Length: 172
Image (cartoon, rainbow, N blue to C red; front, side):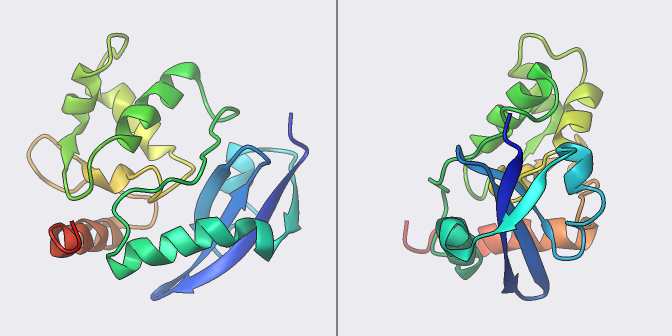
């Protein structure tokens, strides 16, 4: 078990993001201000945070490239090995593979998993995603094509979906 995570911040308007990583990869993406309370410690209790801009630089670079519309797939390592249940990690693996600019419903994700009991169980796993944007849970929507909820708010989810649609065929 990792006793500490490296972290750093990056401002990409309108937010200042807070990112953490273990030795194995990215473990969390949230907003500055939430690192001393929930939700990071609700995902990973009893972790010490060590600020290391150099170690976090590849993650920050790729996040900036995503928002600039020049990165459509992340290739930095992601470490959710200590997150949630095995089922929740399976759901996030499916979500991680949703192509840029594509949206799927919670039901679509559930149908791709043999052990999914319902789209609600999938929705719960997606809602708990600790690695926002890198595991693109903004690409998962309701069956009636409504956006649904998002940890950073529904407006941010819409903004991310529209960002991807805008840059979908640029530099492809």
